[in-house]
Structure formats: C-alpha cells, structure tokens
Image 1 (cartoon, rainbow, N blue to C red):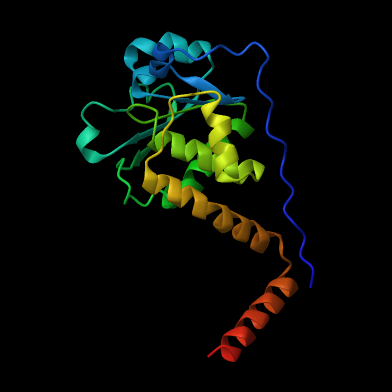
Image 2: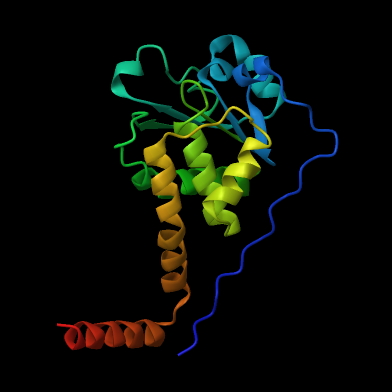
Length: 203
C-alpha cells in the first residue's frame, strides 16, 4: 500500500534589501514570514502601538509564565486578538503541546489577511521555538533548516536545549499526523490492521 506524501509550499526567499543585524535590533520585532513577526515584549508595549499599527498587526501571541504576568501582558485587547500561553523558559517544559494551537492561531490570522506578532519576554527562546515549529510544519522542513531561516531574520534567537530536543522530535510527529490526515478510511483501516498484526508477531 503506497501512501501519498504531503506536499508543502516553498519557503519564501529573503528580501534582497534586508538589513545587517545590529545589537539594538533584538529589542525590535522582525518579519520572519510575510505577515508573521517575532520579537520581545518591548516590541508589544503600549508605547509601540504606532509601530504595530504601521506594520498592520492584527493578532498577537503573548508567551509568559505566571510569575511574569504582572509585566508581560496583553496591552491592546480592544484592538488586537490575543492568544496568551503560559510557558516557562525551562528545558523540562513541554512546549510541543502548544505547537498545534499556535499553528491554528497563526493560520487563522494569515488566511484572513491578518498579521501576527509572536513575543515572549526577550523573543529569543520560547517565542522563537513556536515560530520554528510553525515553519517546520507549514513548509515541511527539518529543525535545523527552520532554525537557520528564523535566525537569518532575527539573529539573537536561542531556544533552550530542551526546546531544541522537542523541536527535533516534532518533525516525525507532524509528518505522521499529516500522513494520517491524508489517508482514506480504507487505507487507515488497513494500516491499523497491519500494525496490530506486527504487534502480535513481536510479542
């Protein structure tokens, strides 16, 4: 039984007039994909509303943990749609569980002509990991390629070691999920039957 392989769009190529990275740029947001921005909380503060509106931001993913809630907060809930995620920048944090809802939120925005800013505190680890996962699943690329793609646009990204390990594991997870989604009911039934037979043969 031959299964159809998922078909992915090509990653957008970088702009020819892209700026050289300078240290102060880590305090700003950068456009990673058309309509998808990554940055620190400082790029989403109340004083930055004119810049957010200039770039057409309509949706914001705000990443924080409970102890950060007093200073990392949704500042424009009447203007933008928010997804607030409680994620610790800790190697043992299970960040994979947030990848599907992040992708659904970003896709929902981009498909309706919106633009999304993804930010944590520094825009280096948690938020970068979510954007990398989105690129992996959307364009069918490996972790290292997705990391390089994001880093070329926001040089300071540095997901913690636990997040890197989970991103590397996620490649097999999202490919398996897509394969199952593409299978017809008959193919799925046959695949489950073969898997069950293999279990009995190896026990």
